Image (cartoon, rainbow, N blue to C red; front, side, top):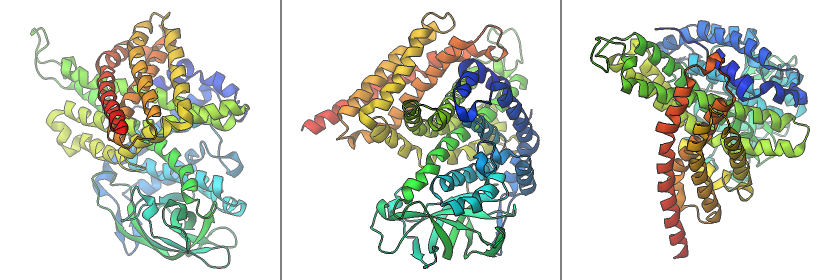
Length: 583
């Protein structure tokens, strides 16, 4: 099997041609010294680490898994050394704030590094992604002393972070959680309770593990308004800022899971552990969502990363595996890539990964604009796009990532079911991405009941206007006109459905059962938009465009028509909802 090949040529093409990365960065004061050349150089080196260091550990980690002995977690062979090498090379600092030792680079670069990490070793990538989410929450909601004490070492990679939210009786409905936080009179709180499914809850990398824990203050009201967020470190700090006494919490057990075996998923027991309040009392969910929204985009990128690596392996296998006769019956055996059904499966994956990467990069760019553009109206508009696309990227990318992994496994036939070929691990690892950080059903309901109707649907209308403008421009471009013609009806259907949803915004309970269909419809239109953009901006001599016209046409001919079917299903449901409301 060929090793993982980071898609640097495609990234370069998307940065320069499709995203206009240099021009966009030049307009942002915080990123004006960043350009495509720098981004490609950074990602080329990051890709080498992923392919040379992390991918070889992927099967090792899956085989050995994590273990717990006498309260100490041991990660698989090589994992701790790889993490320390990753941190020493500065990869934990890429997009972090320069005030605390970060490089302050574009989110676009970060999200592409996250994709490569997810392709090479999904379990490893969780350590760094979760730490970054915790860093962002502390940065936004922590006091100055807390930020000074924790952020530099978390950003440098010396310390890591974890989110401790879920309890056995409070999964998606966090309002039911029972973990308690009792004031100690010195600015600290005693945290007591049990959390489950805590990724990166502990490890053997060394240093501190900083938990962000949701808990209730005494006499806090029931429901989500009674929840606060606390910083609870594995080790309390010495006067010099280093790790001192062990805090009073630990790993009660490790979960035995379908996949991501190299990632320690812990049950954590807090027994009067010392913690510090992050943000305002009773505003824990507000603080939590600072990291949760970023984490949901990160999880979507995990789906993209799995799809990319599974697709690469499947294509390499299909080009080498000889079986069956050619379609005209004159040659045998032939490489199975010649068989139409195998080509269909390969193109299904490729039509997602290329457009999905482009859309993810566009969303990451909007995040940069939302934090750095000098004009408030532009920042607000970019933020509205990020809010709208977050549940779409999380749910659609992880669904399609899992589907692509399953299809890639199918291409291998019986070998895909055998451990030694690695394909069944991608299927198992990808499955969790559809579940954690808010199940995909929850993401779909968020899109339908919140994001599509926010501000009277203004964010969605703005996004649709962007898409329509590109379709209009593409009409006069030979490489893109036919694609734009095929996308236009799907966009019209999505716009009409969004209008109806806004009219029914007071009676959306009925339609939530169709929310997943609406999200998939939205994702198909968004990915189609990216294919139009890619085709419109490609140049004949772009090496990364070789073979892509076939993939773009496949998406429009074979994938996009499914959007029309979904639109008809949802349209009928909306009509039933209106009748029910009238009755």
